[in-house]
Image 1 (cartoon, rainbow, N blue to C red):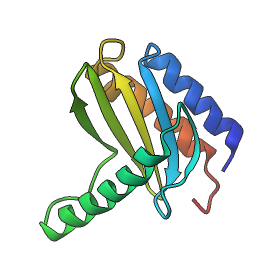
Image 2 (tube, one colour; image 1 turned 30 degrees about the vertical axis):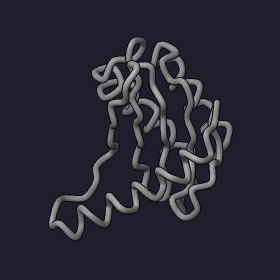
Image 3 (cartoon, rainbow, N blue to C red; image 1 turned 135 degrees about the vertical axis):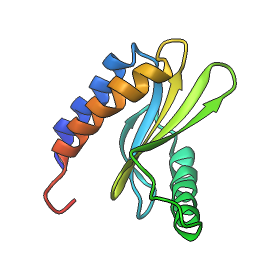
Image 4 (cartoon, rainbow, N blue to C red; image 1 turned 180 degrees about the vertical axis):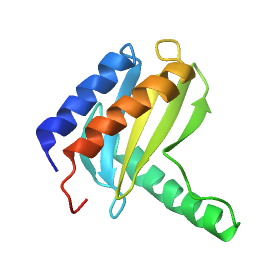
Length: 125
């Protein structure tokens, strides 16, 4: 993984979200340990790693299509939590929805940062 490119993806997240990204962590699905982030929350990373694994299993066992690029949880106090599904990796983002609307997140932020993230991966990832 090219950590310089990953760092660029974090910077792009801040920029494109109008500084609405309050915190984030990129972590491996294998162990849920943060690789990089800002205002990191290692407990949330570990817990949402488990949530994603259970969600994937539930979709599979329920005969549903597989998880797409992300899932999004609306929270109280004008906040939202997004988990980007990046194959072997996940990227969780806590957002202020007053600064970054769902439309901005879904149509601009996620596609752009996901592209930079994928470019940061080695061929083995």
